[in-house]
Image 1: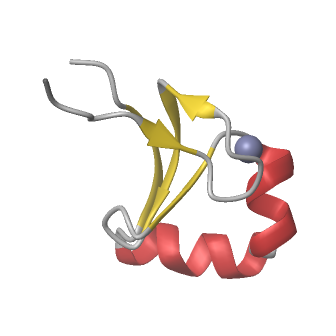
Image 2: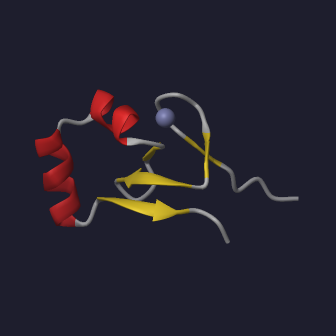
Length: 59
Ligand SMILES: [Zn+2]
């Protein structure tokens, strides 16, 4: 039994896809949750550096 579940850092929702930040340090399920923690500009910088992107967590 492995617990590979990913939960949104903001709202706690279980995620099958969403934003992953800084190599899995943080996860956000939606634009709304992401934007409470990161501005568009901050996200853009991380995205361009490869530290933030939308992904799926399903096997
Ligand atoms: Zn969320």
